[in-house]
Image (cartoon, rainbow, N blue to C red):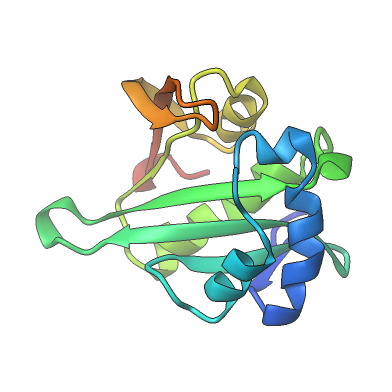
Length: 165
């Protein structure tokens, strides 16, 4: 899949060392704790319930984007997660990757709604998702346990198929 600035391709086992290095940066690890090479290999091998893609800037792997599909017909939708390595923040790559995957999920996979749920204090991610067209829905109280054991609120954002540009 190609966006305006990035390409998305299925995650490969050989991407794991590169992505584990990017994910170990404190600015990434605080939002994606425990994302090590073994876990990335599991994702690349398709173990689990998410579908994963490498985010490419030209031919360089700069991050990971994934989705989970809720298959129940009356509630069918997909949820997206993404991270980019710190050297690639602030360059417009994140919003482009999210828009690219959103188009695929809405047009090719037939979803009518997508969600994304960053921690409420992850301002950089929230800005990127809003640039991609997602809208704030509400606060998910005490949504995620942080590495220090405290609970933090999440922010639910969604994008409807009719809102896609």
